[in-house]
Image (tube, rainbow, N blue to C red):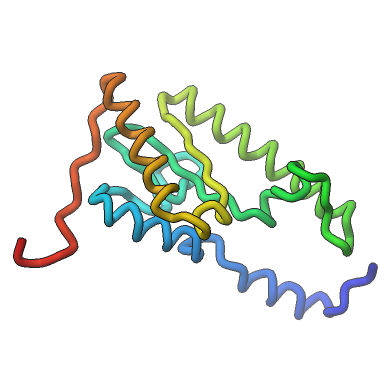
Amino acid sequence: MVDTFDRATRLRIMKAVRTARTDPEERLAVALRRLRLKFHRNDRRVLGRPDFTFRSARLAVFVDGDFWHGRAWFTTGTAPATNAPFWISKFVRNGERDRAVNARLRARGWSVLRVWGSEIRKAPHAAAQRVRSRLRRLARAGRPFPSLAPSAKRGR
């Protein structure tokens, strides 16, 4: 199917798509803060620029958007209705890139956790609990648990 927008309009639309500080990322950040976990966001010093990093524990957390990472395609084989070959190819390339980044980070001593955006939207606290569980497991393996952020409530 032919694109309904001219090239300049499509480019402007695609540039407006957020790649950082998306709604699922913001929800996870709030949930992590409620657990008083201290983290860094979109750290350029870490390969792949993870959405959240816990440097002392060497944990990289990526929030994968369901559409952009092809969740429906990989789980049920459902491709977008328009321009399916292009999107399937893009999903495959994105998956290959994600696996390569995971492997390179792990080779550098990092633990990697990927969470689907839809999982965070449904249950941000549960997603944050997964992060905390991984941090605890890493702490049992000898990595330092990240320092706790100050309580959000004043006067305590």
